[in-house]
Image 1 (cartoon, rainbow, N blue to C red):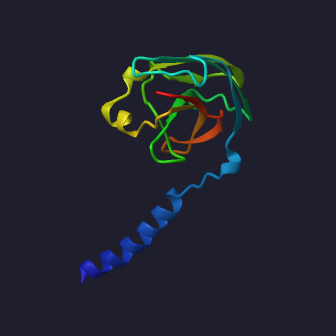
Image 2: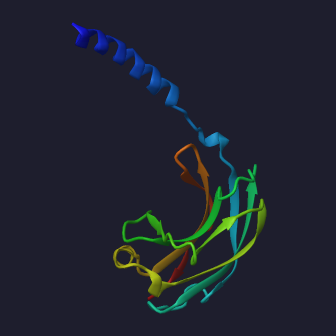
Image 3: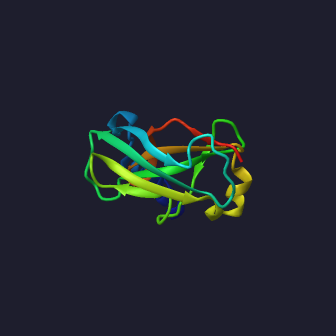
Length: 156
């Protein structure tokens, strides 16, 4: 008999805990960014190889900027062999910058030789490069792309 009473108490308690911990974040609460490439090396459409270093100056502007530390990042991304998909490297020292102001210009670079083996397998040829601004949100630190450039293509 005591097991049955415990089960009756436990079920409503779990429902209450689940309903209290659920929080939704709508896309309307996120910022919007404009992103543009000011200059990039090598020149777009230049032939590159695995030893090439891609370097760019990127200008960004974030509407409704929220000055939380680590909330915004500017990253280089690469097109994949799956049309429409991209990946970004997670190397804090290369190809990514944390943004601390609502607008500015950032110099980013990335050596293709830094790509990991599984990233090399995904890399589309010709190489497609795009710069994105992401915003972290919510209690689990999820992130969403809030602005990006057009792709720049490099034959290989």
